[in-house]
Amino acid sequence: MGEYLLVIVSAIFVNNVVFARFLGICPYLGVSKKLDTAIGMGLAVTFVMTLATAITYVLYFGVLVPFKIQFLQTVMYILVIASLVQLVEIVLKKVSKPLYSALGIYLPLITTNCAILGVALLAIQEEYSFVMSVVFSFFSAIGFILAIVIFAGMREKLEDADIPAPFRNVPIAFIGAAILSLAFMGFSGLV
Image 1 (cartoon, rainbow, N blue to C red):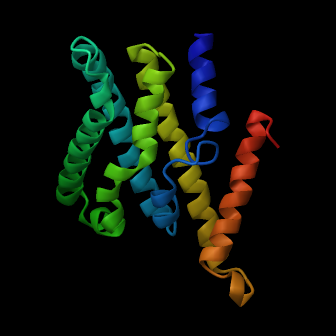
Image 2 (tube, rainbow, N blue to C red; image 1 turned 135 degrees about the vertical axis):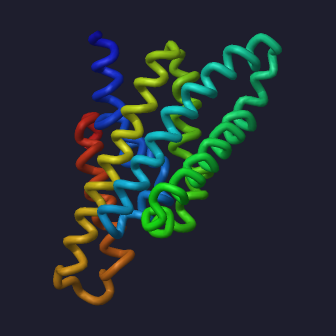
């Protein structure tokens, strides 16, 4: 139980995919202008990241290792992730047209979200069991949600702030992202 708790806390705070590993920056910056779209993206990433890690784990140890073709690992992972993103896109288009429209181009870009690929690869690299891999991926996704929701909330508040012209929009967003990253790096003792 202690090992699971350690992985959970580490995945959310200490080794947060956005703030400590700097993965998934594109959707983090692109979809974090509004809180509702940030939550929608976070939930889509959680679904894809968790399921992708589970499926790729099974395929890695069920197909790649027995046939000694581990060099195809990245290609196989990307195919699994792309398939899952297509599934999410189809479901969102049918279930929540406004969220589908709000996520726009960033929804298909989940396929290239390096956080999803990175977490799936890390689960194998860290030699986690299947259950631990799923726990690790789910809570890494929770860490992603935490990062994107905090940042979206901050960006919404900054819309009303009196910011000097040269710092408006992208510059203040980067400054805020850097400060959040430093705060999360404090969990690992790097600051």
